[in-house]
Image 1 (cartoon, rainbow, N blue to C red):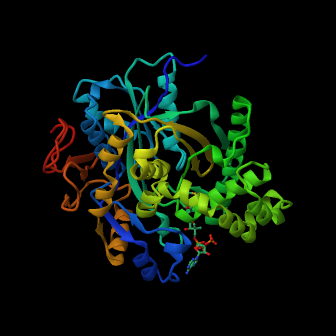
Image 2 (cartoon, protein in one colour):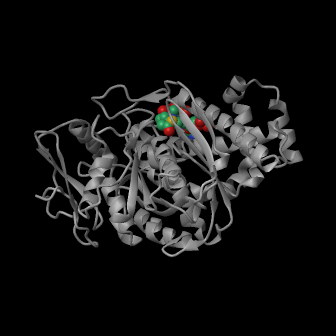
Image 3 (spheres, rainbow, N blue to C red):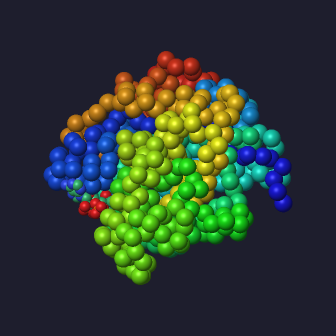
Amino acid sequence: MASHQKNVGILAMEIYFPPTCIRQEVLEAHDGASKGKYTIGLGQDCMAFCTEVEDVISMSLTAVTSLLEKYGVDPKQIGRLEVGSETVIDKSKSIKTFLMQIFEETGNTDIEGVDSTNACYGGTAALFNCVNWVESSSWDGRYGLVVCTDSAVYAEGPARPTGGAAAIAMLIGPDAPIAFESKFRGSHMSHAYDFYKPNLASEYPVVDGKLSQTCYLMALDSCYTRFCQKYGKLEGKQFSIDDADYFVFHSPYNKLVQKSFARLWFDDFLRNASSVDEAAKQKLAPFSTLTGDESYQSRDLEKAAQQVSKPSYDAKVVPATLIPKQVGNMYTASIYAAFASLIHNKHNSLAGQRVLMFSYGSGLAATMFSFRLRGGQLPFSLSNIANVMNVGEKLKSRHEFPPEKFVETMKLMEHMYGGKDFVTSKDCSLLAPGTYYLTEVDSMYRRFYAKKAGANTTSIACENGSHANGH
Ligand code: ACO
């Protein structure tokens, strides 16, 4: 049955990433990698990381309180809270329950939802849960809230430069400036060991890098085929790249995003879609007889497809690459950080445009879906979202660590992971006012957070390292 609610989607967004980062050029030299491997080869500029005072819980507390404050949303107006994360802090207690501290203070404990986990896909699962709730008969008229929060860290080696960290909060409801076109979703889910975290004593994943790239591209092809089939059936015409104004990808590193968009061009060529002109057809024709497997391995195809898609990539993809290139892979937050980049760069001209989204989580789960953008009304307008996220300022005010200090931080975090009975340095000098930070993990593994003074404080704010549960 059709939903009564119209244009359900994202009303408001806030993004938080740690102010501590390392430049890829510097890391590359420190690691002894050939010059250009991380910057050109992976396409990355910079990587954010948590220090000992930050984690996925502190980042999400910061993102949620900031969203509520800046858009003037009363915590009582939230009826569902869903978290996507693959950074395991507790095998039972959800991150969502930590966030409940914000809502309990106002007497609102009537909030459905828990955490969703499947590598980088958990945030999309959380988002779908909220959108489906608002579209359902159990919706009670309040907002949904989705939080994607992850700290992406890898052991020393080739995967380490593809880390990152961030939390994103998204308010969900009807009449949204970022409206879902729910009927066009295409998914691909299967069993693969491309990236997984079987060692519960370590924060680091086990990763088969090459396999993860192929799995990502295979899932992309499959989702795109299904998305196009649904579009064709419902709209009575073929979908092609021309039918979307922007493309936003889950972004482990920028090179994979370049390859992914090129792959969609090859897919359009194989489907004989109108988006592929004669010149491009001639360049791609030699590859039309490759089997699927051969096509994933063909460097010549990759090169030719990237070449023919380049102008289109610059126009339809580049505006959504800023934050992932500057912050790195943020796992569940990665695709929404890419989308936030698009809003940051283009908020004045997005009304009426369609954005195609590709979400991928290893293991694997993937969905392609689309948004139709609308101008919106204050405070829920595209330009206010750009204003609140203040991405330019957040990027500018970061602190670059030298590689030795970065490596030292990673070692300290390894040591702290899963630990108990310690207090942190409580050094929040690098954090912006209003940022939450970890102060203590007690002998029962209970975690305590404080909020750096200075910004508008919420009622659960605890200064100077006192416990966030009100002590
Ligand atoms: N100048 C320019 N380019 C260079 C240079 C150089 N000096 N040196 C290497 N390159 C290029 C390579 O040619 C390659 O480009 P290509 O992919 O177009 O061939 C690129 O840099 C990377 O080099 P590789 O040797 O392929 O890198 P390596 O195998 O050491 O590691 C990888 C890359 C596999 C991505 C690794 O970082 C990793 O495992 N990351 C984590 C897994 C991941 O992010 N997977 C993505 C999907 S799953 C997910 O989101 C977690």
